[in-house]
Amino acid sequence: MISSKATTPAPGGQAVGVSGPGGAVGTGGADAPADRRRWFALAIVMTAAFMDLVDVTIVNIAIPAIQRDMGATLGQIQWITAGYALAFAAGLITGGRLGDIHGRKRLFLIGIGGFTAASALCGLAVGPETLVAGRFLQGAMAALMVPQVLSIVHATFPAHERGKVFGLFGAIVGLGAVSGPLLGALLTEWNLFGLEWRPIFLINLPVGIAGFVLGSRYITESRAPRALRLDLVGVALVVLGLLMLIYPLTRGHELGWPLWGHVSMAGAPVVFAALVAYQRRKARIDGSPLIEISLFRVRSFAAGIAVQTVFGVGLGVFFLVWTLYMQIGLGWSALRAGLTGVPFSVAVSLAAAVSVQKLVPRFGRKVLQAGALLMAGGILLYIWESDRYGMSITPWQMVLPLAVMGVGMGLIVAPLTDAVLSEVPREHAGSASGLISTVQQMGHALGLGLVSVVFFGVMGDRLAPAEIGPAHADAFRYALGWVAAVLASIFLLMFALPKRPAQHVEGAV
Image (cartoon, rainbow, N blue to C red; front, side):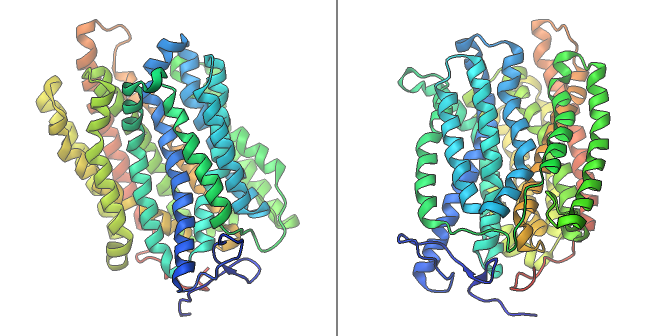
């Protein structure tokens, strides 16, 4: 086994560090200045990742205020929330590959700059059409920015430090997942400067500007070690396949599940099969496919991708029905619903911080499997409490199931990301991280589609006012039963992961 070194060989044989104020590249060695600059770079890209995670969920809590202020139709409201996810999922793999080709720092700066501009467009929108356009642009820019985060980490940090880094990343993921609704509730409730809901977007401006300026100074450039070309046919097939799958899922319930939607979803696997065949051919012709199919021969990557997809389905179902249950079913305010998620957020962050550094090196994949079982146990406890206390349930009575679920999720998110990327060759880090994020979004979209069946499908279309609350509570418990089943399947899928984490040493990838 090759021993760990203080420097990480970059593509082309040069050491990867972080550029200092004068543009010099640090060696990534053990000296304090280089360490500080490297961690500054990490803080910058993690802040950008957190900004994206929050923006995915922050809008939901403010939808009623947006609808009242702009007079938006239900269709426009649908696209304000779905436009971001569609553009994000469709562009992620392309964004990762563009980073491999043109430089991850360059694409990160373009992405965070564009994301900031799109946030200004959303915050200053004069009508729902402008807001929808801004959300699409936000998603597209996030697709350029987000894949570079993991790629920069992968290329900048020595292998023996990545476990600690991915532990921090998992904590950020957990915090961002539930901070959006709380932050959105606070900003909407405060009505800063009389702007009502607009600060949920405008808050991104100082963060994005600071990230752009500091990123220009402290992030070093890295790219694939050999010349690659963008696979335009692959891009078209990815976008087409994702749109054929996600668009009908997003609009299906609203449109009454038309025939064309079923045909489109049935055709999506055909497009993905054509994509796989073309990528294999592209790899043989010029060695520059959009998706490295060879990555799926790495067991940890293939198994991790499967778990990520199914995990996204479960989270997509849970977070949506949870919000509807609290705000419509129980009649809670946006702020009360947002504060209820704090125990979950804290538990995820704490568990993620220790899972990679302390638990996974000792117990291996059993930690991830314990996380799946804990999440399932928390779900079952939530179902029992909701049934026992009915419409009089309080936020305090939700603390225990949410904390148990949060610990379970924290045990999964950080080591799973590490498991997927740990054996990926550096030259394909951008493509791999883009694929990870894409399957997460695909799973999330599939979960949102399933909500129409496992939540709305068990409620009547015409409910009397007195029936709305109990109907939502019943549907919530039914949907959570499906989430528990999804987590049980994740537990089984995790047997395909390596028993022990890969050795994070130089030369391992």
